[in-house]
Image (tube, rainbow, N blue to C red; front, side):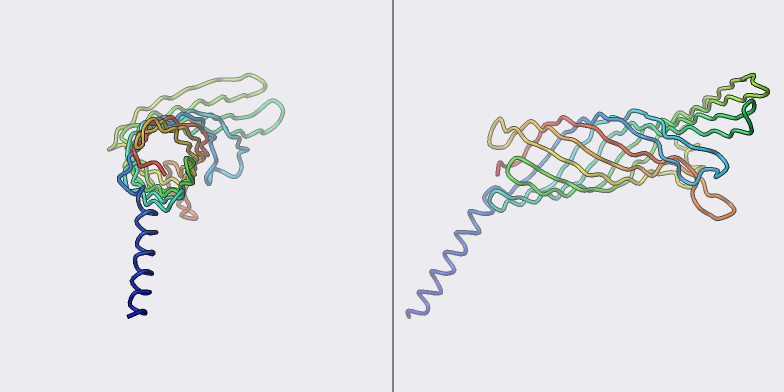
Length: 238
């Protein structure tokens, strides 16, 4: 009988701990507006050309929806991420033959995409760190190609602008944009389940690209992204 009582007390104690620990669990949703800059990165471009990164702009509106598992002051968020993303992929290339003869190429691609991915987070009190991945599906894009050809010291500039729809974009060998990102958030709770979310993010996009027929590797422009985000969060307060 004493053994049963002890076992019952242990079970009650364990259940009490678990009930308290998971008391903050529940549905979680975050509406975010990210704003930041993107730095173009060469992905397999012509080796004969010297390349430099060019800076662009990125923004969008995303919804992160899922479930928060509360473990006292620590919680784990399992979130899916969906929304609209505007991104820039910009690079500068140059080929210098001599002091008076060179070719300079400025390539800029701007995409409007539907974004979908996953973004698990670890919450420590009001702070959260997330690492996610997904794809951006460009629905339209603008491609700007500016070429400056200098012959015998005399420059000649030409610019080509192209607007692409989804059918045009499908002609790329890589016509979706995989991405990974790291997020940092701080929640200022207005009520027990609603908060203003302040955050920052780092990300990497594998941009639109075609395959090199010689080595079958992708040729395109990727981007490294950094920025901040402002959002509204609905979740139990830890």
